[in-house]
Amino acid sequence: MTTTLLIARHGNTFSKGQTPTRVGKHTDLPLVESGLQQARRLAIHLNEHDLIPDRIFTSQLLRTQQMAETINHALGTEIETTAEEMFDEVDYGPDENKPETDVIARIGQAAIDAWDKNATVPQGWKVNPNEIIEHWKAFGKVCESRYKDKTVLAITSNGIARFAPHLTGSFDAFDQDIKIATGALCALQNVNGEWNIMEWNVRP
Picture 1: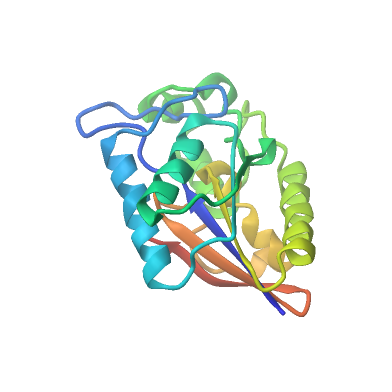
Picture 2: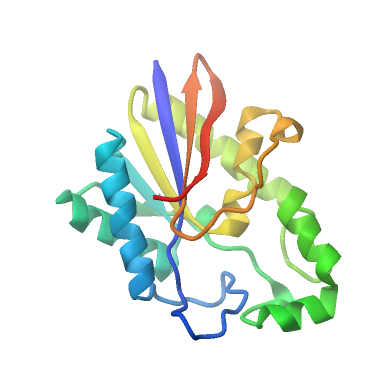
């Protein structure tokens, strides 16, 4: 039996011309119009590739919940959706909601690069990688046991999704950029108890 786990990053929360900030779990922004368009494009992609989920999970934050609502509306479905704390964005500590120039000035570009390359947590961020990894593993077991031969969609953030490759048990062998674009999709499959990454950072 095969279980498919789709992981999507929420859409844009800043419009063109606005100054983006590092939005974490304590900044509950809605999607802007381009973010809603990304959700609609994702719905089209799911429909065209026979990946319509049987169940959707989001974070407790508005941006992920709006993503799910827009996908359901675009598909004409009412897929059961549940908000889970484990999918909330990480806590950026003193860099929460600060422009990236300010973040780099505080911690340096090398720290940002290390975060984007191998999820090394910069100084001051309130992130527990082991806890996030264990949450993914527990969620993977739930998907494997409850959703056999079904498809589950988890809508989360860039900070949380980058730890999902640990489901495979071989994070060091993952050779792609762990950073996921807004509105992008990743796909994992569980076959005979083993998770494998089928696609990563696909932009519909």
